[in-house]
Image 1 (cartoon, rainbow, N blue to C red):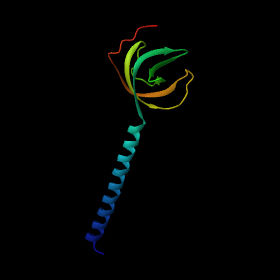
Image 2: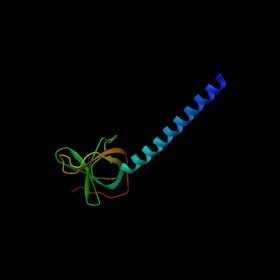
Image 3: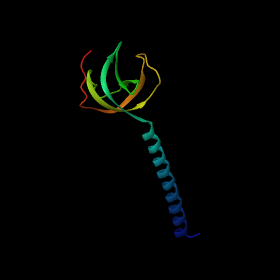
Length: 108
């Protein structure tokens, strides 16, 4: 075989490998987007040390929020469910991002 032919075969194999990788990455991105949860509600303190947001009958315990979510504030949280139950009696939600919304929340 000539060097040109070997170079062409190597280039073709690399191109096929790159296409497969892009397809797998797109599939993984779609799967990750399905795992995201968006909740809106009032951030409340739940003893002993948690912050909770109730949304459509489910209480989500938000963790890993940076900056920290202030209590008694209306928020919209985007996160990923990481467990079914926490010590604060709610579903763990690892926060990816959050922002305040116009929901009025008063102290109880």
